[in-house]
Image (cartoon, protein in one colour):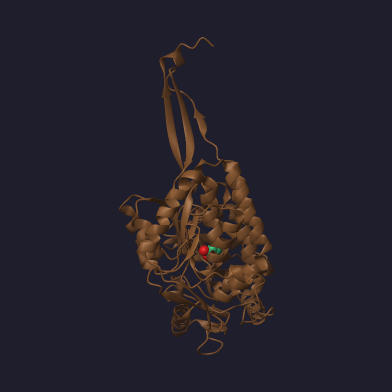
Length: 490
Ligand code: SIN
């Protein structure tokens, strides 16, 4: 399979409107997770190049924030249209660097586009407020202004959608951005930067630096010119960035790890629950932060549920994402395989039954089989850790209270799901779940309209939705005082 436009395959970073290499000329290899072949290289940049990109973003900020929201929205719309026109190429690039099946890669592009479209529209809908006076010689206002230069660091699981979910609201609000894609999947972001330039996004407004995550992360968090850092990735790294940002009290948005409970009650439509679980669990080979991670099924229906689920899991085809029959791609790297294998082996050793899968398809690859484990108990590591792989582990429960207590027994609080036909129970559960996102009778909750984000150790802030742009705006309170305001003849 060939790309139609080879110019979308950029192997340099994009800073201040120029394509550039690392100062050292060093590069990083980017591998195809399916076969381990090198797809290409990107510059191994560090602190100095990041500081330069920040300066470019700072210079570009003056003119960009002076544009009206409507003008910025029109440019974002052009970016949207170019991404749409090139989405076949972009999807191919995604499958090559990330491994997800091509149909899913196209789905990610649609998802990515939805954020650009949404925030192109939101750009002209940033409102302030006229506030009630507390004195008759004063007038009070709250106006909204762009935060300024923003740093953005994204994960490897959604290399396109995470770019647009962060960059579109930032640019719509009038901010400029220095973005670091994941070292494992940098090409999607670089292709999007190429299209941004074609769309007329001015030099310096959107910069992409590739390379050393520690060095780049340090500069983006410690440099005082950067007024906001937005990050998607692990809770561990989020905690570190938060500490680094404390030195200059930087505004932060963090989309961190989840450990989503997925509860199936005895009154649920079991077929719908199975479809919901498959969608939630096996999207991106289980490598999403909103994936069902702990599955709780009522004792009265667990056998039927497990039988039906095994049958559906056996229909899944694992392999090269470019093969149209494949529904499950490889894991991202050896570390991911080692973690999934450890969790499955620990559960097996402590008594879990393996009803499907449970191993690599072939040693030496990153192809982990779709796996179903029954009899998960709280002493198993899989009951506490985020799996980030195609493994369902079922725990049985008997009462609603028990299910809710187990679901909430986690430091994470991103997404939670449950299936039930009982309206009152649904309302009670929805209120009782300590999570930022709740899916009721569905396993798919992500779109541009809903506020995406978690509570507890899953992060701070919300992305997408009407709230997403607020993360890139500051409120300025204005108090206008004057004697004649009091004595106005009009
Ligand atoms: C993520 O896993 O970081 C994003 C998943 C989503 O947007 O649905």
